Length: 153
Image 1: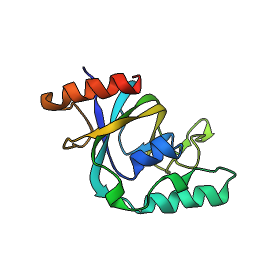
Image 2: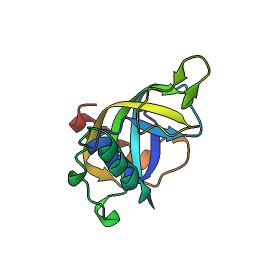
Image 3: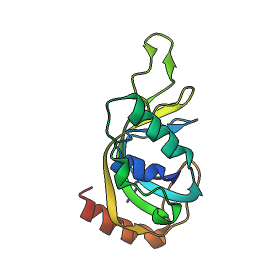
Image 4: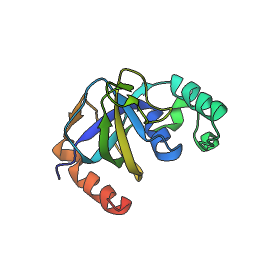
């Protein structure tokens, strides 16, 4: 199993799985494409709900935020699912193409990792996270393989 993992502050993984967030903003890019494990890290980002509320209010989108708890204790840590990294837009404004079309989740001046087909795991897999893309430790790979099979990945 050579699927890398990406750590995100909570509740961003829940936004990807349950609110249709197709973009993960990063200050770096990768040539990697394909499945990426999503790791829910311990830090809590309360501004995630401010952005999601703003997107709902300023657009016609119903993000289903009522399905996502706003209490950090309700968001597990560990490897919580998988999504396909399909592309990366290099900036909010492209030199030749004008404004990036990645949508309201895309933050100016960041790389926009376009995610598709997010599949949450039935149970989180306890695991410490790291920065950048990282390989899960050998001790959790069997649990990851089992969850990937259940998630249809």
